Length: 131
Image 1 (cartoon, rainbow, N blue to C red):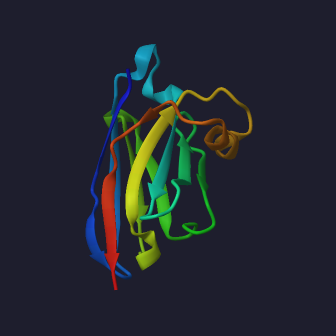
Image 2: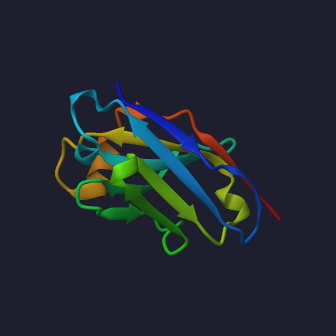
């Protein structure tokens, strides 16, 4: 079974930066390249939302409007790790951040993949942005 471990969360001031990591292992008969990895977040009192996605094989990326231009998703195939570089952080970015993985079963790139659903989830890492 796929295991995902997030790290890199913490307390940061408004305008600051953090880099989250999602280390993957297991892969259940597939390879890291077969997966799409998504980053999600859940703020206090709110539903979990998808914010970014990368198709590991070709590096295609996707961002929701609220993080576009501030966050960058990337992967290191040699380390089986996906990163989320977060810049210009705002108080509304405060949330538990999760990474999730799926072997894509639908066409349409990341938006379709995120809508279809993810199979494996990490336990999350807390990001707090103070003003």
